[in-house]
Length: 252
Image 1 (tube, helix red, strand yellow):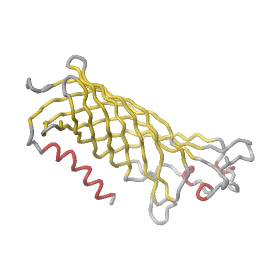
Image 2 (tube, one colour):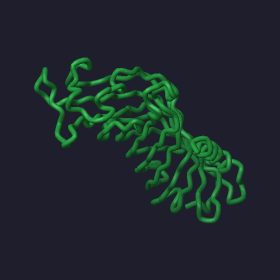
Image 3 (cartoon, helix red, strand yellow):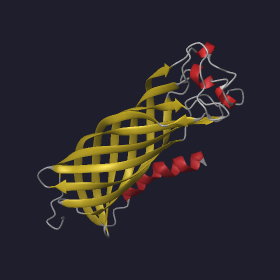
């Protein structure tokens, strides 16, 4: 299923690029984006978590290629620096915080991973192109390149409270393992609103979800985790300005 989803996602931009059967466009816009990420990791065996907050920002490039009936078709690419990872919810079987016997404090652990993320999406928009509002949907593949990570913990790994922890949290293998797979890949999809003005450019507010198809740890039968894929919810603002416009007075 992962291979099928990945194949479909990589075909989306190609289909958009070669399906020139509508009203022709050739518009290029560039700009910047920034936002907030809520992330976790899908571990198997399961590791209880809450969302880890982080930031993302980078460059955006958009090529608008046609208007098919009322749908405005475009290709969108980004290069972002993003903070993702996971934050553990360390509790007892009675859903109480696990207290460390050495510090007397609740045990907490989070691990922030920094990636270069490159989404490449096909976009469909409905509404105004030059002045006014436009609703859009975009989806496509995303790849990521691991840069570094930083762990923050309230306890020493060898002195964790194993007696009160539940399930895989007793082993806490994810706390001691380095990031073994530096390349990440998956599917991103988002919904948003864009406001355009002929003099000031384009401002977009978007909510996006990313589902990782790869794992951050090895997943063979002899490894601890069978799955360890990233999942992100992103809220971001993007500003674009046009560097090439179609010569068409009918575009509004």
